[in-house]
Amino acid sequence: MPARIPSLSYGEQMADASQDGPILVFLGPTLRLSEAEAVLDAIYLQPAAQGDILLAAHAFRPRAMVLIDGQFEDRPAVRHKEILWAMAQGIVVIGAASMGALRAAELHDFGMVGVGLIYRWYRRWALSSLRDVRGSPLALAPDDAVAVHSGPAELGFLQLTDSLVDLQRTFSALMRNSVITRAERTLLTTMARNLNFRDRTLAAVLGAAGWPDDRIQGLGRTGTSQKRQDALLALRTAPSLVRSAPAAKPGDLWVATNTFIRDLEAGGIDSKLVSTYKFNP
Image (cartoon, rainbow, N blue to C red; front, top):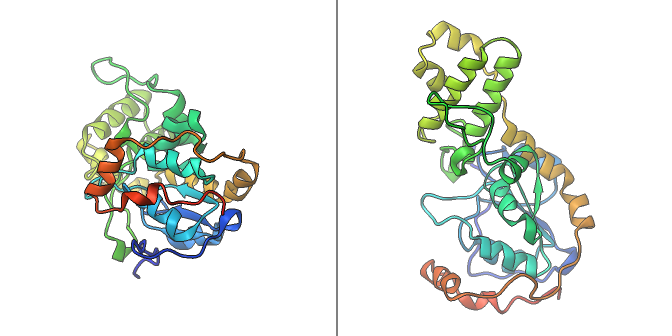
């Protein structure tokens, strides 16, 4: 069934909503739309790319945005500068699970709110205690650790591969349950890291490690989806996080740069939108 996540209407502006405005959620393959809607009453938009936060702010006048999924292949990824702009307008910005966790870790010191285990990994631990086959430390969560290959919007961004973060959690769970050894966990993690994100699946990693088909099939769907868990947590806690967020002041944290303006214009976005947003109208 086609996804019901609407595209942004770039040429249309809706009525001001100020502090009573909606919560916007940028969502894609991390969580099915029906699951998200059952947790949080919000406006659900497609994964964010460059310019989408600016356009969504003008279109919906939100009081908050929850960034879960983002685009990064066909379109430039959502810019840090754009998130800072939104926060300077008094919009609470929450990040979790995927692109949101990465951006929240990078912008925590500037006021972006991070939720979940993946966010904490990105923020606190650049390297893990795991070692690869050469004895080098493995980065616990490199930038592509949350990336997955997914279907088009018409199919609801159906997830086709497994993220490295979820595979790492799965291997750790298998080790705790004595299904694999610590050495096997390290080997499987290294092999998963060496795969392109478009090819990463639990079955592909186990197959590359030489597991027989019957052993792979015996695991069934035992994968751990930390991304899904973090996304659900962000949606459940979003209302309380918005209520407790400190009030912003107009212009806080944000100054336009020529590079940012040029990037917007190169993407066909009217750069005047940067300076015509009314703070808490």
